Length: 124
Image (tube, rainbow, N blue to C red; front, side, top):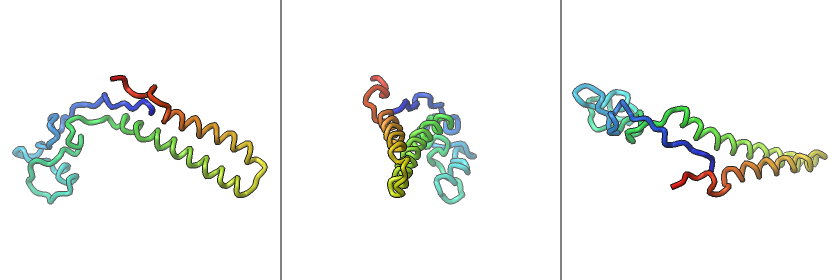
């Protein structure tokens, strides 16, 4: 597995690290968290914080983007290569054998990186 960074969570200032929103008036939940929880717009208490999702610590958007984008990009790359192989195989082009070599190497590299054993796992 690739290096997934999860240790850099920031303490949620919205819910004061509790996971429950009390940012509204008189300790009730704020309008954003009420709307996020899909509840009727009234004074409600005990709603899960919409910033951190009830964890009490928020993940920065940059890490969230990187942790989701890279695997999706790799899967899309492999899918495009497999579709290209299928098209070339069905059209009986002369370049199929050359592209098969390239695609096999690229797919093997991506698969080896993501399923390459314990070298990417955090140490206990």
